[in-house]
Structure formats: structure tokens, C-alpha cells
Amino acid sequence: MSLDLFETERLVLSGWRMDQLDDLLALHGNPNVSRYLSLSGAPWTREQAETALRGWIELFETRQLGKLRLTRKSDGKFIGRAGYGIYPRTGEPEIGYALFEEYHGVGYATEAASGLRDWIFRETDAPHFIGFADTRNAPSLAVLKKIGMEETHVEVDHNGLTCQFHVYRRPHHV
Image (cartoon, rainbow, N blue to C red; front, top):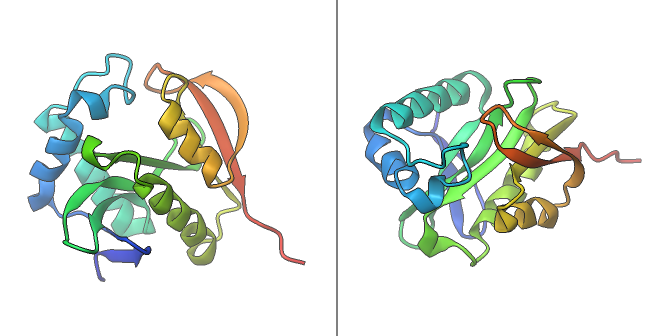
């Protein structure tokens, strides 16, 4: 099985390997990237990154889900991660993304999320997926809206953050 899942106009979304742990640690070890991912907002430790990476690899191998590596087509540069996790409280696929700061504001998160939105309905039988972000994380919430997600409710998530939840339902074709 190829580790490349799909491409968008500017990005390649692919599965992870354990030898790429340092990339994930560089991303989530950055306090500005991790600040909206947990109540403490603390950068990830090597152990946290390794646990996440093992989980994403397993999810990719078993369900073709998981948070995926984002690399830029133009130069192969690792710029972040995007993909689907499984929300622990409900078992629903949940979309998420995190990019290095220097790649914020140029549409990469929206491009990856749009590609993931289309991919999940093309490749799986999922009736919907959810997305959520800390209510203080306006850029992330904007991405969810840009890809057409509907706001549902505000809830304290499994990490203790007050989050705005969204849903995107499988389109019905007549």
C-alpha cells in the first residue's frame, strides 16, 4: 500500500512512518502550534508525539484515516499535518489540521481540508464527519466554515477545551 493518500493542487497528503517522528515533534513541539490542542497548551513531548504517530499509523493502515503528513508539491517541504481522527466520545471521524506558522494564511489548511472533505465521501461510506476548534482559534474555525461545515454546538472537548463543533453531512445527489 502506498503511503500517499491523495494530492491537491499544491499538496501531497500521505501516511507517516516512525522515522518521521522528529518532523511531528518539530511541529507539535512548537508552542504556537500546540496552544489550542490541550488545556495546558503545552508543546508536545517526544513521548506524546510518538504515541500520536503510532496511533495515526495504525488508523491509516486499518481505516485509511489518521492525521496525514502535508508536503508541498513544489519542493517536497513538510509543512504540517491534516486528516481524520476518531472523536473518542462518539467514534465519529473528526477533521483536524496543524501547520507550521510560516505556512499560515496562504490557504494550505483550507486546501487540505477541502481535499479531505471530498476524499472521505468518495472513498468511504461515512455519512458525515465533524470538526471542532477552540473557540479562541479564529483561523481554524474559519477553515471549517470555508469548507462548508455547519456549526452545531459549543462543548468542552475530551482535552478540556471549550470548542465550537461543526458537522459536514454527505451530500445527497438527486
